[in-house]
Image (cartoon, rainbow, N blue to C red; front, side):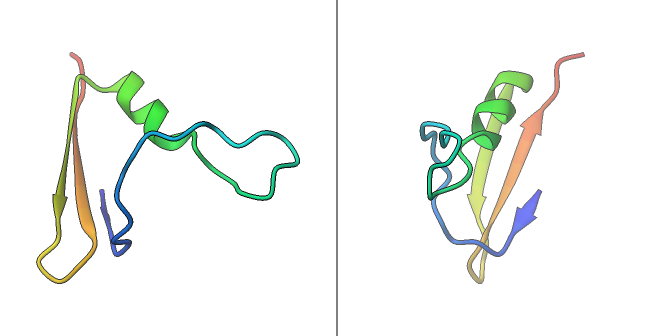
Length: 55
């Protein structure tokens, strides 16, 4: 996956129902489903996330 967001990919606690901020679920799911992940900064900002699926 490639994104234009330069925000660092990091685990954070999932947001609670009714909490002002949102998110915190995606990176937990990615790390739980895949064997390995690699985040590479893009040449002009952003980043690419690569993941290895189990067979």
